[in-house]
Every structure is written in structure tokens, then in C-alpha cells.
Image (tube, rainbow, N blue to C red; front, side):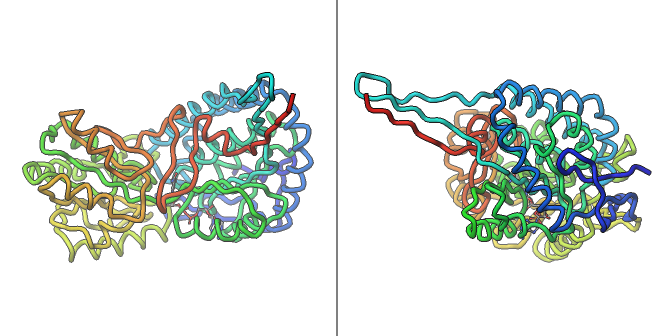
Length: 467
Ligand code: NAD
């Protein structure tokens, strides 16, 4: 059995308490690892503070080189990491490989970014320069749905900008973090990257810690609000990537056969546990019956199982608590709409639920208005485009949205009127390293990826020299 350890100050260390990790495909404990506590967190912060001066003074090329080394190291270990990811998270092995490959793209992209000095004025009167300096110690608080990708998309820009980093994985998916910690040990100087696990009990200790300058958080909107409130006590910078209830609007000129499989993928990938999953599908009345049948067919063809089995197309929910939550939405949907695929919790070990499609359901029901975060999709009929845009926008969330149709100009015009950080046409959920990503309204504050995301890990310092 692998001996997982925390990475603190360049050393792999144990801790007095252990965290048991459950394989969601069996519902049974399959490994354990050390559980960090306040003492571990304080040691990690002290180490990160001590490492900051030397790390931030390196030439950026040296920090870029570390990101390239990390990417290569992940690439060399992709099979073992993907297997571990499926074991602790549940997603099918192909999706685990996909998560790591996506992460590699982000690492390589970050490794090419620079933080140049911006000259705003240089004339006979004055020289004005904008310098972007690192903040200090940055903490990344990570959810369980994309444990590798979300974490490394914070770590990479944070350390590239010259900050040092504390990585706190979700309590149910700590193992891939610790496995990557072993790789980081040989790549980064001591204290630059530290990994502290918890059992949902260190979040507030991080957000109130006087030694931490910024928290980059991805998780639910409810927890995000707590992060923002408690970060105020030390005036920490925060980036919040939160929940969503992404609408998709299918226009009357869409080709059902073409778009149905794509819509299914957008709603049910990672068992519906994706922040930018398509979570409510509005279909024009002319196509409604045909679309409901086509999506139901996709759901019925899904192969439920352990993600390590090659034929599995949909794995379990990540944890028992999330399964319970989705079952409540399922029971509500049985009253509020008509189930046309799935609708059952299979009688087997693990946290499985059938991919479920619900038709004849409307706005104002829990399944349509809230974020279930599971494999259950409501399909809602509409007749008027202006009206459906208003309904799509009638949400506290504003993460992603999509429009589907053959007339690309018309689809783009509809997309432009939707209120979301990312608006896709004839696709849903693409998040790529060269495109800024973030939510509006209660889906978040700030963006990730690109220079815009990188700059969120810096302070602006201006030099204004009178000549
Ligand atoms: P969660 O909010 O329960 O937990 C996220 C992390 O916060 C975990 O590491 C947890 O231990 C930690 N945490 C718990 N209490 C805390 C506190 N009081 N202070 C600080 N940290 C605390 O979220 P989850 O259930 O792990 O993830 C699912 C949610 O994340 C969904 O709502 C999903 O939409 C959202 N999400 C958003 C994005 C995005 O980029 N916008 C990406 C992935 C997931």
C-alpha cells in the first residue's frame, strides 16, 4: 500500500491523524493518508513565507522552467495518476486522462506567460511604469470534482508570479494531490509548494490566517460566501470560482441528431459534477419531442460502472453526501416533471445513480432553478426567444450558457444577450488556457487563465517619476 505523505517545506511528512479515502465505485475505504491540522498549516505557512524572498527574486524564466518540469513529470506519470484519480474521484478512466491532459495544456501555456513592466508614459515630463509584484503566500482551496486540474490551474499562475503556495485538496480527494506533491518535491525549492489535507476543518483557519495573502477558492457558492466574509478580517485578496446553473438554449433551426449527443456530453460528463455542466436545457417547441427522445436515448445507452472498467461511460457520484443531495432532486422531479430515462438508484455498492432525463418540467421547480450537481437534466419547452432569454437570465448564477442553432449569426446574437462569464455557441463547457474563465453574479469573483488570471496573483505597484 502506498505511503501517502504531506509536502511541507520540501519534505514528505506524516501527521498524527489519518484521513480515510473512499472509492466511490465501491463505497469502501481503499487508502488513507495523513490529515493535516492547525499545526501543520502553521508550519506550511512559515515555510512558504521563508521561501518567498528567494523564489520571487528568481528570473521568471527559472519559474517557467519549473512549470515545464512539472508538466513533463505529470506526463510521465499520467497512467498511474489517472488510475488514482478514478479510484478516489470516480470518473471513467478516459475522463481522468482527459483531466490530466487538459491540465498539461494549462501548465505549458502558463510556462510561456510573462509579467512585463508596463510603461504608461515616457516623455519629457514623466516616466510612469506599472510593476506587478507577487503577493506572498497564496492558498488554493480545491473541490473534489476536478482535483488535479483545478489545483494546478491555481498553482501554476501563483508560483509563476513569484508567490509561494499552499494546496488544500478536498477531504474526499486528497490522494492525487499528495501523489503530485511527491513530484513537486524534486522540482520546486523547499517551501514553494506545500500540501495540507484536512477533513473540512481547515478552511476558516486558512481564510483568517494572517500569513496568507490570497485565497483562490473553487467550490460551492455557499462556501464561497463564507470564504469572502472570513477573508475580510485580514483583507486577503480572493478569487472565487463558484457554482452555476448553466442554461442551454436550442433554437428552432438546430439539427437535433447532430446536437443531441453534444448536449448529453455537456450535461452528463463527470456524472454531472462539473461547474460548467449544462444544467437546464431549453428547447424550442418545434423540436421539443424529438430532442427529449434523442437525449433520453443517449442516457439509456450509458454504461454505468466502475470508472476503471474500459466500457464504463458514467461513473458514480463522488461521495455519499452528494448522492443524497441528488436523490432529493430526483424525488422532486418525479412530482414536477416526467422522467423519460433513468430515475433509479441501482441496487449495487457504491454511490451510483442512473443518468436521468426529465421532460415536461418548468422554471420555478428545484431541479430547474437550483444546482443539483449530478446526472439529472431537466428539458424545458419554450416558444418565444425573447422570453427564453429572460428565463435563462433569471438566476442568481452566471457561470456559463450556450446557444445551439444552424444560423450562427442569430445564435451569436442570442448568446450576446445571456448573462454569464462564458457564452458558447454550438458547444458547452470549453475552458481553455488561452481564454479567460470566471463567473458573474453569484458564480464568482475574478477570472482564471491567461494573463488576466495570472495578474490576479499580483499587486500593482506604480513608479511615477517626474523629469
Ligand atoms: P465545497 O464548497 O463544499 O468545498 C470546496 C472546498 O472548500 C473544499 O476543499 C472544502 O474542504 C473547503 N471548505 C469547506 N468549508 C470551508 C470554509 N468554511 N472555508 C474555506 N474552505 C472551506 O464545494 P464542493 O462540494 O467540493 O464542490 C462542488 C461545488 O464547486 C459546486 O457548486 C460546483 O459548481 C463548484 N465548482 C465551481 C467551479 C468553477 O470554476 N466555478 C469549478 C468546480 C466546482
